[in-house]
Length: 359
Image (cartoon, rainbow, N blue to C red):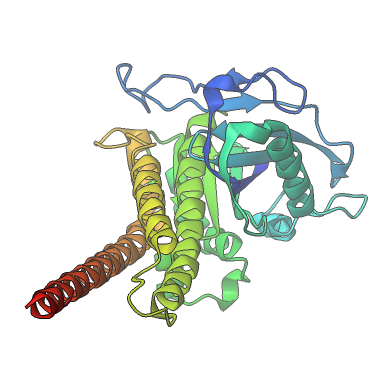
C-alpha cells in the first residue's frame, strides 16, 4: 500500500488576524489557498480561502522520507501547520508508530510545529488583535491517506475485508484486542462518493483512501473542523478563567457609597462582545451545508469532534456572562440611586435646618 501520513496542527494565537494586510509569512509571499472544484464541491459554492505558504521541506527526514510543509493563516486568529510524509507499507499495522512521529534526528513534529507557529506569530506582530496569552498547545490530528491498495479497485470492499485492522490503526490499539462494539463505533462515521474513495473519521485520526490520489479537499474539510475545535476549547478556557476573575472582582468588598467600580464593568462588557463576535466568526467560517460530498465529510467530522457540545458549553458560559453583566449593571445602578437618594435627603435636611434657623 502506498500513500502519505498527514499531520494537522491548529494553534489559537489571537482573537483576530488582519489577513488583508499580511505581506509575507516566514519571508515568503502568501497565496490564497484553493481546492479543486469537482464532484465534492458545487461550482457556485463560496469557499473560505485562508492565506497559505508552502516552505521548503524540513531539514530532517521521517523514516527516510522528506516531510513537506504547508502553513495557513486564518483571520479568526488561527495558524495551522500541515506536515506530509510519504509511506509504503505491506500492512496497516506498520503505520501504527506514525501516531507519534519523531524525525530521524530525534526531533518531534509537535515541537517543530510549535516553533514554526511561534515564528509565524512573531512575524505577524501588530496584525494580530488580542494575542493569546495561553501556552501554545496545538489541536493535533493525524490523517492516514492511501492512494494505492495493492491493486484493489473497490475501497469499500477493501474496508469490509480490513475493518478490524482499520479500527485498530485509528484507535492505536491492537486489532485483536478491540471488541466488536468498539470496531463498529470507530467505523461509524464513513463517507464515500465513488467506489474509489472513502473517508473514515475517528476522534484522534482519520483514514482517507482515494485511488485518484487527490485528497486536498478532504484534508481541508478536516482541518476546518479541527481548528474550530481548537478555537472552542480555548474560548471555553478563557470563559472559565474570566468568569472566576469577574466573580471575585464583583464580590470584593468596596468603600461604602462608591458603588461598583467602572473598570470591571467595562471589562466585562468588552469581553462579552469579543466572545460573541468570535463565536459567530468561527461558526460561519464554513458554509458546509447540504448533501454534497465535502459537506457530508465536514458534518461527519463535526459530529465526531463533538463541536456542537463544545459550542453549547461556550454558549452556556456566554449566558452566565450575560447574567453576570446584568447583575453587575443592576448593582451599579442601585448603588448610584442610593447615593442620589442620600444626596436628596441631605439637601432636604439642610433646607429644613435653614428654614428652622431662619425662624
